[in-house]
Image 1 (tube, rainbow, N blue to C red):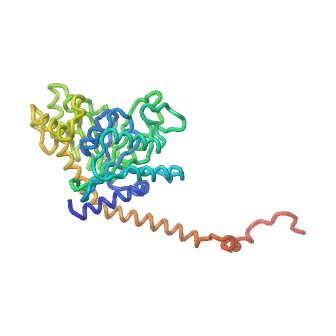
Image 2: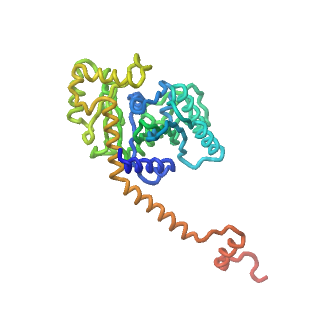
Image 3: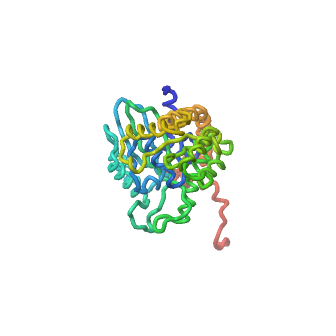
Length: 368
């Protein structure tokens, strides 16, 4: 990666830390999909993070995972609040960030599960195995950021969003939660500078996946939507040709087309990253799957595609991002100027009010 590309991406990440994404559109790779689409497994394949299975935590709030090139290995985990937090939450977030900053090895699955649970507690989000309480939310717009640096990494950033669902789970989610998650996902899809990674299982009818229609609504020209097909190992025998035609002709997501990944099966959930990738390579080298274009199958080809897309969107939109930022700052400064100089003392406040004093109505008996 060129130095100037890495610098642009770092600046964009910094703008996300400041939550300026709530005011201007920022470039982002957004992983979206229906629940049980294989979204978490795709993220695990991309990042090599041992995301805990069935914890219910990764789906409760957006999770941003950032890689940076560095001479030494380093991991930093933080929470980026969606709104200005109260004093108590500020202290909790600062303490959380200070404690989850370390040099050296990656997380193991138990470490990461502990981090996710603690983040959920700070965000006041219901976690798996926890009894519902009126004081807890099912989902949060706060972002959990996991940043990993090391000499083996190129700069890369992706945000995983909660999965869409069509039916509430008693004691866990409600119809209001369904709407909240849909709005959260839509806010990222409608960002004209976002690359949409729409995760869909290959063994189901695409028409049943809500994310496909939402992506088409947000990106009708399909110029920034990449379909990610998962679970090809569960496709019925004889139905492989349908998937082949879909990938080769680019199907209903025509702009960026589709890519195909084979996640860990239930019998390989404990496999390390190298073993996982070897199993995937073996799968795509067998039978009809071997006829797929090599740049459209496997996690490694997917990573390269995403890296190219991320660099491209940053190059093409960075100048516009800076213009939008300057415009917002200019408008904010005009508002400040219209307010006038600070009036911190009682004397300054009286002087400010004196010119308008005559305009106040006189009450009481004016004859006295």
